[in-house]
Structures are given as structure tokens and as C-alpha cells.
Image 1 (cartoon, helix red, strand yellow):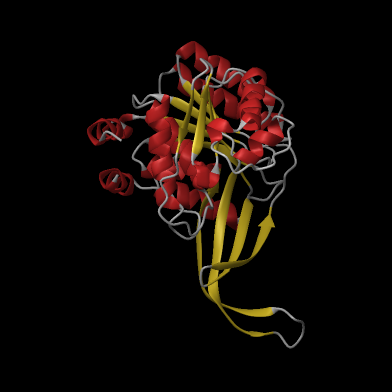
Image 2: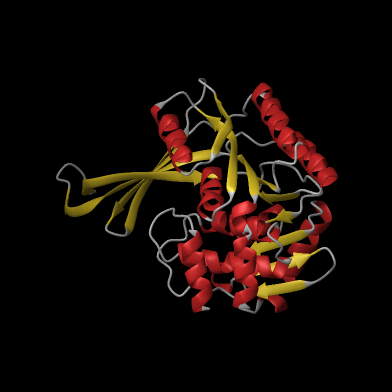
Length: 335
């Protein structure tokens, strides 16, 4: 990595503006310890010592963009409940714009509650409604995002699909069409079996499992270099043909990530993680960092290298955490 070049890219982060549209969540952690087994049933007794919460799902992408120094605009849906209040308070703490967040009293705010003994996760409880959000709310979201694009107020739009009922094909199609007319970058982190292919996004970023599912192919996880993996190449070919992204970035866990571009070039970026404690939220960090780097003047390969470096920072921590500007800056210095 050319440190001077990457430092130049990072200096542009503060002047960038990103809208993130998708499924908002609150990640809650119950921290404690297990010292004995219950006499009522063969299950551990968990003594809660502390409770923490943080932004999750699409909100974690928003948080990553914000902690890297860029202006962030949130678009999503919460319920009229305490979890929603806590989520909005967290968005405000990170100075993320909340005018695009709608409140729907008919549904719960999505909450992922994790029970952690030491550093070991014992259990996760999900509280959510995954039925489709009303078209009135969706139309209002699209109108606001399109308004930001037409006024020149954003440099990129990220779609974060966690299959919780917010995103649908016509929303992406309308926003992508407007963004293309304005020369605005769009990025999609997709979920299989959620939406049918929408063409023309700038960046598509599935992980390996998602990419194979989206291509309707079975993965045998061969222990070979990604450039020699013919099945992975076929998956990329199918996704480039059906979704037509300009850039397809596939996360490959310990193998790093592979970048496929429409011009036929393929690059593999080896992982930069020195130690891995928790991969929660790493994909969100990659999506946020890649998009932000790209709109800050990076080439696709440079953006992938920056995103890989950022992912190496967050997987060395426990829980869903973002990468901060100073952490990425320090990781860059260390090479």
C-alpha cells in the first residue's frame, strides 16, 4: 500500500456525504458470566453484569460512514417503542441525519439481543417484524433520497438489505436511475431471496455464501486460491450478467476479497486481519469503507484494499463495532 496515496484518499472523507437506505436494527449485548447449571433444567445460569447497545444492520453501515468522518443520512423504519427511541438516540450521538427515518406504529423496531459470557456468545434473541413496509412509507423514502440526489447533497447512496421488509425492487430502480443521471455512486449489500435483480448499481457487495445463493449455485469451498476457483468465477459471471453492477466485490472470509469488474479485470485482496475475535458487522464496515473510498478518489482496487484494512480492524474486537478514522489511519501506518 502506498501510504501517502491512501492518506490522501482518507483526507477527503470529511467532505463526503452518503445516504444509507435499509433495515435499521439495534444490537443489544447482555454481558455477564456463567458459574453454575440450573437445578430446574440442564442449562447454564447467566448472571448479567452489564447491558450495552449499538447500531446494527443498515444503521451499522451508517455508523461506519460517520465514524470515518463523512456526513451520513439515514433512511429506514422504526417502531413506536423504546427500542426505536434508543436507536434514534444512537443515530443522533453519531450526528447522523434522521429526517429520512419513518416511524410505523404497527411494527416493532428490530432488535438483536446477544447473551455473552466473557467473550463467548451463548444465545441470540431476535425481536422483529419482517412484513413489507407500506408503500406510502417507501414512496416517502424514495422522494427524500431523490431530492438529495437532485439537489447535489449526496455523493453516494448505499442500499443495505437485511430482508426485514424495507427495500423492494422498484425503490432501488427509481433511486439508481436518478443516481446514474446525476453521476452518483450506488452500492448494494444484497440478501438472497429478498429482491429480484435490479440492474445498474455501481457496487454490489455480497459475501461468498450470499454470492453463491444469488447465483443459484452450490459452494464446495475448495481450498484453492480464488483466482484458480473456476466455480467462484462462474458465480461472478452470472451476477455480473444478471445484476449488471460496474463492480462486484465478494468477501471471502480468511481469503480476503475478490473484486470483479465489468471490464473483465479480477483482483484478489488478501486478508489484513492479524487476529479474529468477532466477525459481527465486518461486512457493514467493508461496504461503508469501500463506498466512501471510491467517492473520495480511490480506484476500485484501492477502495477494496482500504475496505480490507478496515475489516481487519473491526474483527479484532468483540461485538458489532465500527472502524474509526484514527484506527484506520493507524492501521495504514502499520501496513
